[in-house]
Image (cartoon, rainbow, N blue to C red):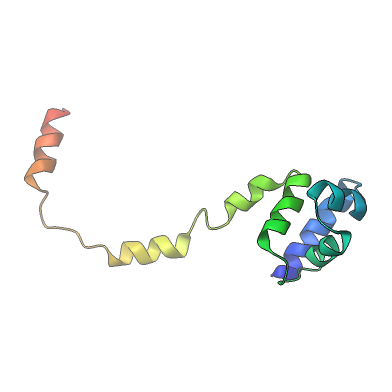
Length: 98
């Protein structure tokens, strides 16, 4: 997965016609670190990956991670129990909103 992420970053840089030197300088990292990022090196801090994403204009992509947690929601729903009747507070609130 990390290699795929690195490859995606590499391709995004090439599509923008930016050299590794340009991206590294703009991200405030060493060129060698950028090379490691593009190789998907797990030893590089996630903050460095984020800096490169910012330079490439892809910073919002990081917000998509775990956004729609389908498995988590299914597990949560499976653990929910429903009461046989609504509480009195719920019934009163429903009547007040009608």
